[in-house]
Image 1: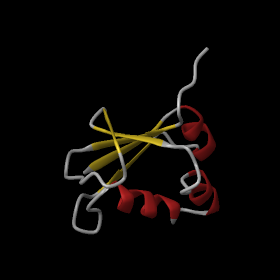
Image 2: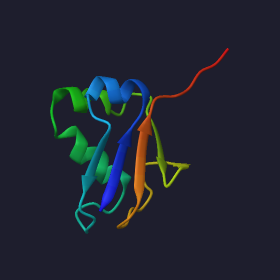
Image 3: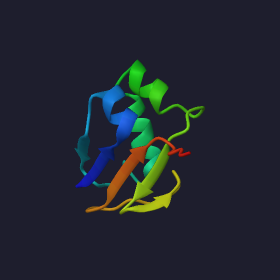
Image 4: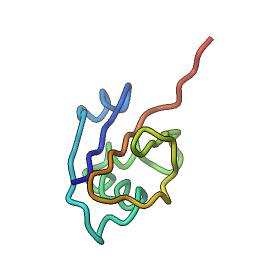
Length: 84
């Protein structure tokens, strides 16, 4: 099982905190997970679009969409953090 978490405004906009997907060859990397999420509807496609600033971490370490996922991994999406 791959656990996908959403934080901050992403969680609010998507009204989703967590999803789980079966690990397997159809989800080889984070890019495939993003594509699967975009297929959930227009709002998902817009929020996770290529032109959006969304950060991704796998197992609590920053990564990018080319990272290979396997059973037991945790993938988290969150907006960039700004401070002042």
